[in-house]
Image 1 (cartoon, rainbow, N blue to C red):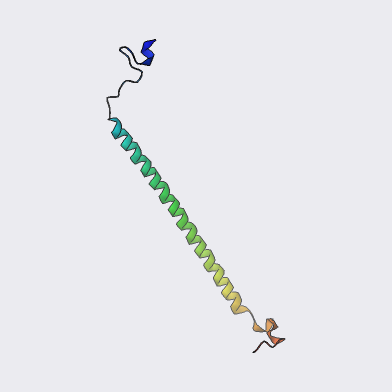
Image 2 (cartoon, rainbow, N blue to C red):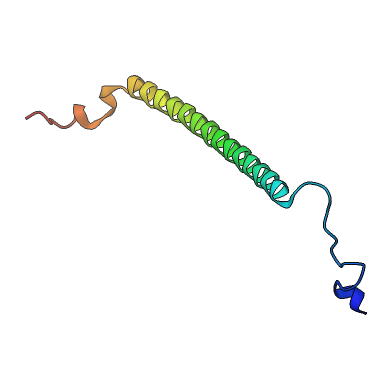
Length: 86
């Protein structure tokens, strides 16, 4: 059974006649970098969307608080019962 370990006319892993190994590895590395860049871009986009949504929510809350403060009647507080002037 020496053929199984690469002796004789048949080798276990014959050399490929296609692209050189370094070119194939370079292409794989480029593809991996492209996938990583795409994933990073998607992450940045999700974070930007989240930040935008959060800003809108905070703006709406601020508007509600401003309206509530405008609608608040000064007579509703303790100011009419207690003298707080200095």
